[in-house]
View (tube, rainbow, N blue to C red):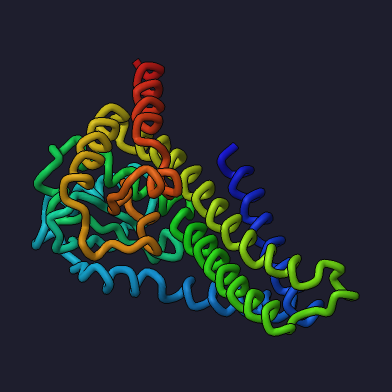
Length: 284
């Protein structure tokens, strides 16, 4: 069901992008929109992992430098029948973790110094299994594509606003909507793209929770880890975290009020924990 939902939402993003391109320049605009998205996706596919790791000053570690974490990831990767990813540690007291990389053969998992101190071994194993599940399910690639599409739509929305204001874009006879229609699309489409991005991210988080719990065999340990990380993120958020990369982390690294929670890329923590507890009860 998660895969079907993700496919549907990606299709919606594509249609939004086509509509934006068409509103700006008709058929030529559609082609330009596709080329723009293709170029952005190409760049993201090859370089997004390096950019985000550098952004958070992540340092790659070996088995000699961090034996507990490295050997844990290696053991979980073998259990999941996956290639061994690179392992990174982020110099932050905030408690969090994420996975990145375009495919399982070129993947990396990163954990903060704070999470290594906060969680016990079983809980940390659950978190690392969750991150490996993201790699296994190709969520790292999917989230990059979705974020790129949403960014392209937002950029086209800004262009369409200026085009409508100064009389650019398609004529009234061609699109039948005129300036007001173009302005409406310019505001509505980026908002819709953001909502779709959040829906995709939440869906993949639920899937990674379930897949990660199966990899480590300890759904309750992952549930306990999520509780601790949720409280830890509120008490000590990662200072370098940005809205553009917050969807990558196992729990939202940003703090904020009810509006930010409403537009969060992560599902409600209570629901994630409840699902894992239900899964544990079925395994008993």
